Image 1 (cartoon, helix red, strand yellow):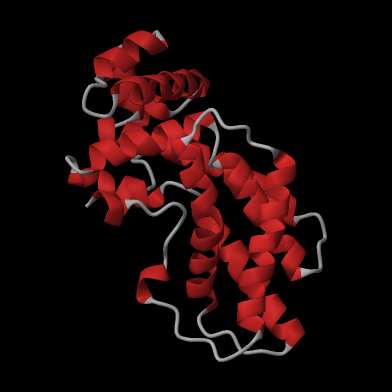
Image 2 (cartoon, rainbow, N blue to C red):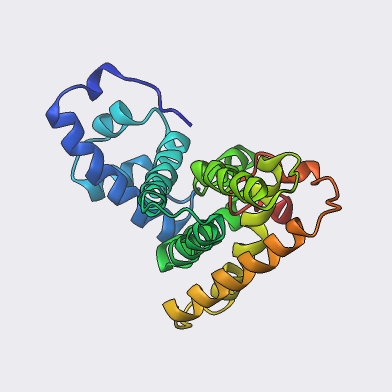
Amino acid sequence: MAERDHPQRAGSNGRSKRAPILDAAVGLFLELGFDQTSMDAVAAKAGVSKTTVYAHFGDKLELFRAVIARGGASLDFDLNQTMLASVDDPQERLARIVLKLLQATTTTTYLAFIRVLTVEAGRRTELTEAIRSLGVPHVIDLVAVALRDDARQRGYVLPDPEAYAGLFVRMTAAGPQMDALQDPEADRDPVHFDAYARWATAIFLQGLRAGGLPNAPDSAKGQVFPRLSRATA
């Protein structure tokens, strides 16, 4: 996902133009989709030349990935801030992660991106990597740490924590996001989200703590939320 470095990107003026280019790209991608969004249109909306756009982003796919990465980085920061609150209880930490994911991935902008990706990915295979990266790469690491802590505190063995972390994220967050996709105007009640996060976390941990764990499926490894590639293949 790392962007290619260009000599023209150096300097404060280049940095100041990068943000409006990304802002313009977000609006156009969500309104028109990937294919119908041109670099000329992005340049015009951002108030810069097309040469400037290409100086920051080598092509449209790189620009699209950068737009996705910016949203993921913002949520990743929020998650890290949540985890810095000195919460010793792994269950509480996991519930907070789920709550943050529900709040962030049911916003109007995020849901609009999901719709664009769902439509475009079936026709543009080069977007598959972008779809898989949509979300917060660091979230799996945070969940895996909390699961390890819970296993240590409760005295059970957890094989492959990263795989179970992937399952946890997908199983706890996918349902509410699907509800939001089906009813974009529905109220995102934070009290309801908090109650759901705690309920889903408790059920998942009860299953782990009961012992006799089956091996996590290979498809759970290395995945970030949400995973749309199979649904759109």
